[in-house]
Image 1 (cartoon, helix red, strand yellow):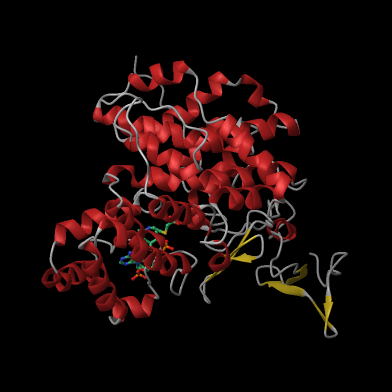
Image 2: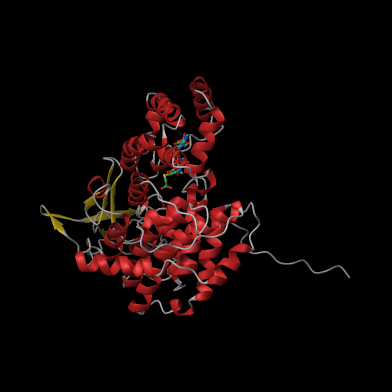
Length: 443
Ligand code: CMC
């Protein structure tokens, strides 16, 4: 049995102490020294810990990846205890309102804020790719009139894969960049088509003279191609800020899905369709829709205590509250609350905001939420702003997917460049029958 193993090469020395973990296997008495790098041990280092020669070796069991880092990433930093969020090192508070969504998308994907020429080229490339093939329209026409827009977006993203077979060449940098331009450029067009399809209205083509969000608002709300529509600049700016706040959030469910599907070397259209499908769920990007439905259901402040009782009794969740990483106020929720003021100045106050504030106040002073460190997350206030801006409730998850596309693509590209990454393939602990045999048929 192995005892007193030497630390692997590269084990850091800090203050005269080895940066390693000594593990004693009480089954065998074996002792192992496992290096600690960047606050983590490598799960594969556990494999050497065996109960017998024929033993497979120790696995770590981590359902839902609550304490497992699946990659090293230089894109987004979150300190959940302190309530900090940074994209490529820049605090979210400095980016929101000061940099446009497309500048932030560039930052996420390429690692630096664009210079003047880089930005001009980037904007050109995105606007050049906002159009969709006419057959995409026909494809979308096939959906039932009451299809959920997120279902249409998920399916249409996947369908784009059939329009751009070159996208399979994921190791070709130039081809990869073209798909990035297409996905960032086309997702608002697809989103607006999904919305207009549900209303039976003709689709509005992109107007490349407009900004990313002004163009999106025009594609959503312009009554017809011949009619004029000028979005309020305050609203298109507020939407742009919302997009900045939603652009990335490290290894969340949809981004991990993007990486997982991308790790099989699938093209970015099907990978982002899978990511969008993951985002659709009510525990992830679908939560903004659920928050507004919940607030509408309770209707008045006097119903808040009853809702809190139901939540504490485990009958339902308080949507827009809680986060796997944040155990403090989600900084995005704070910024959204501030952005709400500028929106309400134009649209008039959404009466749900007072209800949401009352609910937040009660929840934040209640032991149940304090003990579990449950705070409002990004989705608690976003739906209220979107509703004030005139967006229908079922488009809210789509409004999350549009900016998250840049985060997904940044992670997809980072994953492809990372020499350590292979096809994602978690282990399992088998708990089924050991071996059984099919009984002989009675003759
Ligand atoms: N309402 C009531 N109780 C909650 C809530 C909530 N919203 N969130 C967590 N809890 C309780 C949960 O019941 C558990 O209690 P106990 O220890 O007694 O069993 C404890 O808090 C820990 O919860 P968890 O489910 O183990 O936490 P998680 O990290 O697995 O889940 C979450 C994170 C976001 C899925 C969860 O907080 C939740 O369901 N929130 C509501 C949905 C929501 O707002 N989602 C949007 C997340 S932010 C946008 C995004 O990035 O997707």
